[in-house]
Image (cartoon, rainbow, N blue to C red; front, side, top):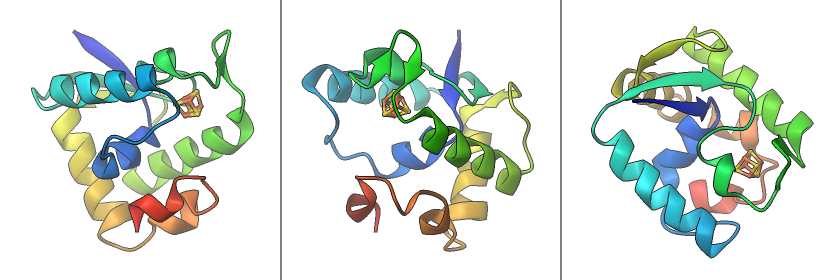
Length: 121
Ligand code: SF4
């Protein structure tokens, strides 16, 4: 099983503590966290993914903040040296996000204007 994960969600999963856009959304986030803990292959995308599938902001397959969040996705890919639609194991991706973005203090320069920013400090 390969999951679709939009690149900036690599950051969201690092900080997720049960808050989200709706009950269905957070329930799916917990499920996805469990699945990702098994280190599956993931395809990195810059569009709606297996997280967005249960989000109320997903309007017929397009995020209602698509310009903003796609910019997050592309910055994450660039900083990790990865490409759109690239497949890799989740742990490898999460390690890159941790090292290249979070531990190096770049996270807020990417998504500091997100409504959840305070939760990720
Ligand atoms: S806000 Fe947009 S990018 Fe974030 S989970 Fe919802 S649909 Fe996906």
